[in-house]
Amino acid sequence: MKISVIIPVYNAEKYVAQAVESALQFDEVYEIILVEDKSPDNALEVCRQLAEENDRVKLFQHPDKQNHGAGPTRNLGLENATGDFIAFLDADDYYLPNRFDAEKELFKDPKVEGVYGALGVHYYSEKAKEQYYHIFGDRLTTVHKRHDPKDVFPGQINMRGSFGLFSIDTLTIRRDALVKKLKPFFKTHLRLHQDTEFLFRLSYYLDLYPGILDKAVAVRGVHESNRITAVDTKKIKPATTKVLLWREINEWAKNENTIPTDIKLHIERMQRSYEIALAPVLKKWGMITKYLVTDYQSIRSGIYNINFRDNLFK
Image (tube, rainbow, N blue to C red; front, top):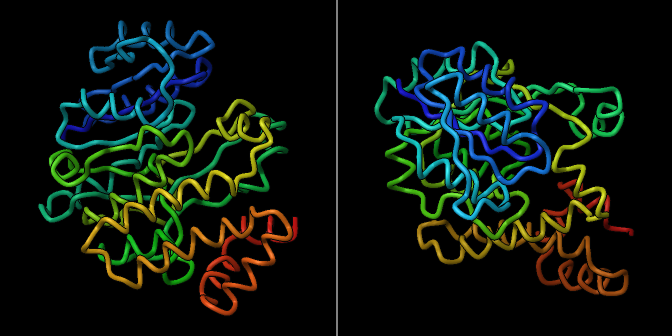
């Protein structure tokens, strides 16, 4: 296996060396592509040093040397990847020694186009744990049981109840399948949830198989400077960004002729449920009344997502 590991780097001076070292432990990792996205800290110099110290580490920046966000930054990494397989890693996260154990066996079968696993969590400080334990806890981010590839897309969009989630940090993809079947890669206009939108489309077009689901193969590093912190600081409701995500998915689904009608309706209803949750009080109850009469499933879809419940009576 020749794996290209793509690491977007932004404001990760303290963590990126650990991320790189965690990827270098594997002989299967052919190259590590660091894409520095005009960090406000000293991350660029750290990246330069890492690239100088190891031939497998390659450093890139956007041509204009400006900040473009995680989506365009990962796209630049994909454009420069030369391995047969693609893996991703956020600069403040890290791989565990079992990261590619399942892949080494599963990818012997040519029909396997992607493999996903379980993600653990590590809090870099007590303050970070205090802030975000209610979001991540100590639990794995994982798919709850092994599923056939055809069920991964409906499962990811919560079509049939609780399926679980996998993270981009635990995903490995055949590069030729990705290039052939998925364009664009990451949507450049989405500043948040662009990885979720990517995973939704990826799970529709590619055959993704479960790897190690019952224990972590990579770890999410949680600290006070995570991007999610910046969102909270700006007082943006999480549901607001979810509306944008589901609008994007809905527009894509409408234009994809091969998606079954029931799945398209579910996606539309998920969008509606977030829009109802965020509407002003009077408009909110008008929308609820309308959909209780005309499309109860839009309300029912909302009952099962936490952002709908949290914002319903605000």
